[in-house]
Amino acid sequence: MDAEAIRRALRRIAHEIVERNPRLEKMVLAGIPSRGVEIARRIATFIHEIEEIEIETGVIDVAMHRDDVGTRAALPVVRASKLPVPLEERTVIIVDDVLYTGRTVRAAMDAINSFGRPARIQLAVLVDRGHRELPIRPDYVGKNLPTSGSEKVRVRLEQTDGEPDAVQLQRQ
Amino acid sequence: MTIRWTRKDLLGLRELSADEINFILETADAFKQVGTREIKKVPALRGKTLVNFFVEPSTRTRTSFELAAFRLSADVINISATGSSLTKGETLKDTARNLEALHADILVLRHSSAGAPLFLANRLKASVINAGDGAHEHPTQALLDLYTIRERRGEIAGLHVAIIGDILFSRVARSNIFGLLKLGAHVTLVGPSTLVPREFEKLGVEVSHKIDDVLPRADVVNLLRIQHERQRKEYFPGIGEYIRLFGLTKKRAKLLKPECLIMHPGPINRGVEIDSDVADGLQSVILDQVTNGLAVRMAVLYLCGGIAI
Image 1 (cartoon, each protein chain N blue to C red):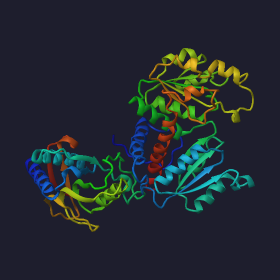
Image 2: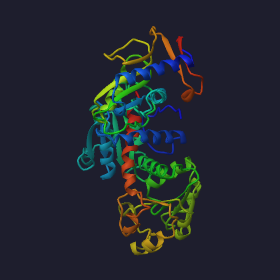
Image 3: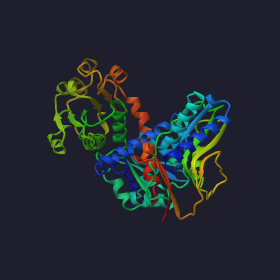
Image 4: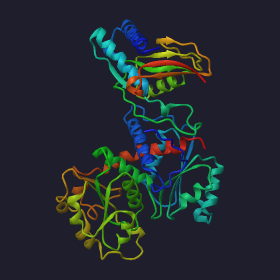
């Protein structure tokens, strides 16, 4: 995917979110650092263009909710989470760049629950590459990308990586 | 910042790099946020066992570590000197080996002998966190002091920090000196020449015996408690004399810049090293230090206890 394809995919996701969520003022887009946060910001900008409403955004860091602490030689960097409270009656949309095993999303749902009990949680991803290890499915997908386990999906975004927007499939 | 945390133990700040110290402080930012959640608990250390092994009495450090461990979902056992077999003649090494036989993952150690945490860290598979060893180091106290300064002032580099009081017997002072210098602060030690000998200048700090000269120049003053329990002979004529020469009285506090932070690791001797009104005043961040201590200890336990051993 190039910059234009990414732009169109995120704009389509914004339309789908508007279509499926009548109460946009009760919604929060929670990005998983670091690219998920940027993607959430872009989707919020598109929704603003479409509906002229400011969507709240948040950050949901999953490092301290992971299930592989103690099995890694080095730990992932932990960042502060930021969500509007109370979460009750709100729809939280988890936003990430690539959906793979689903373990990050599970950790994100645990993290969200420690802030409160949202009315519902949905999931938006730029790329779904398959190979789920948990019963998790996305509500909004930018692109379905069939992959094999030995391949790597490389996402680059201007704001987080300092490189032009791109999604590439790399063989290892 | 991208550094890889690879240490299983935290023994002191002397051996840490500036990057490692900053990494702990940034990790603590994330854990401080957990304290504001509806559910103030994360599963990061679920299934791990932490042993609080305090051979010297301590309430605040031990409870801070205990609460930090609870918030990370670890299981905690507390052992104090009086309740342990140390009083029955068991050696430190044997006690520790017994703890390991119980599959403890993290050992938080407070000990009256400098080097005791290092001794155990070299012999145990478990993570060892120094919670104060003799007059050597108290790394988590210094980290929470650094965190509090950074939170209030943005950056530590370029600040002038005065550490006042019983430096000679203070592990808090030593850890603070190492940490502050690594992060680029200017440090002045203040106290009577018996408690602040000139030898400290070799560490790269300024030494002064006149508090009134230093207060107007300081961005942070960190007051240390006069440790009655560690002083076997008299190092100053008396408490009255100490207050007159070095106590942060209401009158003296007027010499401080308005934005100067007043810190104290606690427990405070009100009316000795600091006046009650000053300890409760607007410049005081003493209670912030307590709150931040929890976040910093969560970060340390997560980093040292979370890596694969």
